[in-house]
Length: 194
Ligand code: SF4
Ligand code: SF4
Image (cartoon, rainbow, N blue to C red; front, top):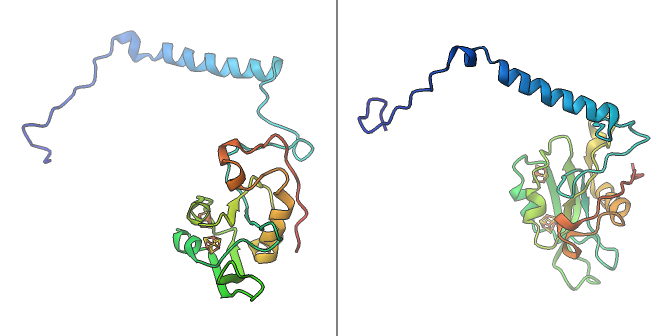
């Protein structure tokens, strides 16, 4: 539609009275909200800061943090190296090298010989988790992992599997419980393999 189209309906902003132009009422309303929050923090239980790391923030069930590679009942990596997660990833931060599964794994053709995620490049969109047909990759509630170099935050298969070991008890796998029902009443500080 062009700007001079006669069908275009132009709406004029409402004319303000002189007292409305002073914006005193909205300013007073805004100050009231601020005062209410300050009173909640000072006299109630509405504190919005905490003494980290002594106190641990528990993120919501929908929070998407550091990845993990899930294991099956036999302790094997669940991933079947289908590459769907890497294809879906908008940040191109998943690198997988697939290999033929060993003969003792008759339930699959391939497995990931190498599985690397650049946690610094990831935008934590969750597309990889959504794309995976076998619930092998999931995003956990971990938000405070740190490293001394960029290389330390490029997670290989061993590290991604160690995130599973560290989180599986407090964050059940998705197929066993919908993400929205995951308990996140507690939080763990994992010790990950270097
Ligand atoms: S969360 Fe998104 S950006 Fe991160 S690895 Fe998965 S698909 Fe890629
Ligand atoms: S994690 Fe899932 S989607 Fe990604 S390669 Fe493995 S099986 Fe496929």
